[in-house]
Each structure stands twice: as structure tokens, then as C-alpha cells.
Length: 314
Image 1 (tube, rainbow, N blue to C red):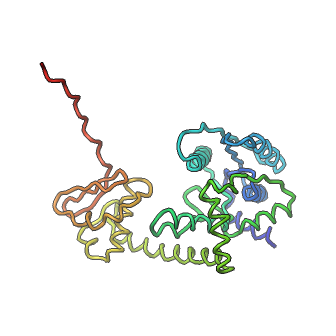
Image 2 (image 1 turned 60 degrees about the horizontal axis):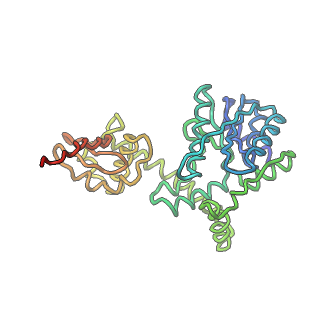
Image 3 (image 1 turned 135 degrees about the vertical axis):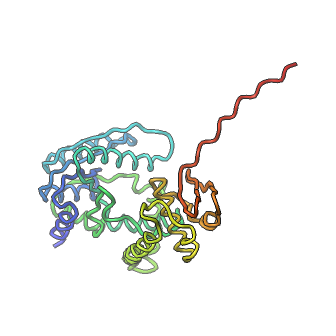
């Protein structure tokens, strides 16, 4: 049965650890919260009220009722709205709030992403960001963050909620073509399905294969680095294929930045051409350093202050 398979997936992901469940009140997070509650793990539901829509307070009240029904305590965050990309801010605010609570108790953070979200994410990244990462999709686990429902579709979570009699809310912005994700969901995915009925399944299978192959490439890259994982012999990188050298350069840059350092791999030929003691600013706030045949990355130093000009004397 669907419910039994979903519960088994959640239990395998949580392993009885305390968990903060990201809870918007939508079908996916409602399904996930109910499943987590059934596992018996110590859980907290986290709802972020962004205050962006007239329905926001009503959705918060809905979440409080559902969490009370499931016997799960609800925590609510109301972040201040900044300038800039609203969706990026909302995502960052949600995960930052969850991380604070999880770190305080050693808990996991569970998100209700489904296979349907995975397809949309891969297609969106493929269109908006070049590189191999775009095709790998979301991982079932990244640090404290777990996604137990990646093996199930949005239709599965809706069927689960119907079977359990769980009410959920629909965010109207999910249907607004103002947002790129909504255009992928309501335009691109149906178009691909019209080309081939198994389009979504094929995207998921391709991502699975690429993640397996990425693990092999990651091992090859690790073998090219020095034991500290933050430096490499330039001669060794010059001796391997350009593609593998690019991956090694990108890995070193990401480690130095503490995040994906977009675009550094494209500078690999310039970086590996450095001789003696040399440095090169490569973007993403990073500078490549070569000394005694070893490549490392560090932060780009700030520009020196320019003294103010003094007016000439008459």
C-alpha cells in the first residue's frame, strides 16, 4: 500500500532522530508531518509566515490546527521582508530558521520535496544554470536536511492526505506565471509529457544515473587532491584530462568558498598555466595561488583604500 511504503521511507530517512519538519500547510508538507508523527520520532513543525499574501495569517492558523490534531508542537517564524528576489529570500529564511532550531537540539530538518518537485528542479536548473550540477537534482540527504518523499509524486501525497482525511491549503502563487517555477510546472512539464508520456520518469532515471556517475567522478577528483582536500599538485592536474582537471579546480574553489563557486571551472586552463609563484583572481570572490607547484584558493583581498584627492592650491 502507498501509505505503508511512504511510512517506511520516512522511517528509513529519520532513523528515530529528532526532526524539524518544514510545514507550509500544503499537501506535501502535511503528508510528511503526519508520517513523521506516526514514526514516534520527537518532532517539531516549523511554519514560516512571510506575510506576503492576505491568506498568510489564515494559513498559519490552519497549520496550528493540523499540528495540534497530529500532536506535534508548532513553531512559527515571521521574518522581515528585505529587498530583492522574494523567492530566494523566502527559501533562505525558511532554511535558516530550520537550521537554527535543528542545531540547538541536534535534530534533522525534513522537507516535503517529491519526485514531481525533483523533475521541476532539474528542468529549471537546466535552463537557468549551466554545468553538470544542474542535472543531478536534489539529494535525499544534505547534511541535516533530509527529503524522505523524493520517491513519491505530488499525486501520491494528495492521495495520502485524502486517505487520511488531512486538510491542506494550496498556495495560489504556485499557479502564477509570474514565477519561473510555475512556468516550468504548468508549461514546460505538460509540453514534455505531450512529446512522450514517460518524460518525467525519464528525467528522474537520467538524474539517478548521473548521480551514480558523479560519485565515481568525485572519487577520481579526491585522488587528485592532496590529503588536506584544499590543494593539489599543478603538474598532476596538467597530466590528466582537461575535464577531470576542471572538476578538481572546481572542487578546490568550492572548498575555499564554503559554497558552490560558480564559473571557476571555466578558468581552469588559465589557472593551470600559472608558474612559479603567481596568483589569479577567478571570480566568485576567490583568488587562485600557485607556489612551489601547489595550487590553492583563497579569498580575493579587498582593494586598497584610495586617498581622497586634495584640491590644488591656487
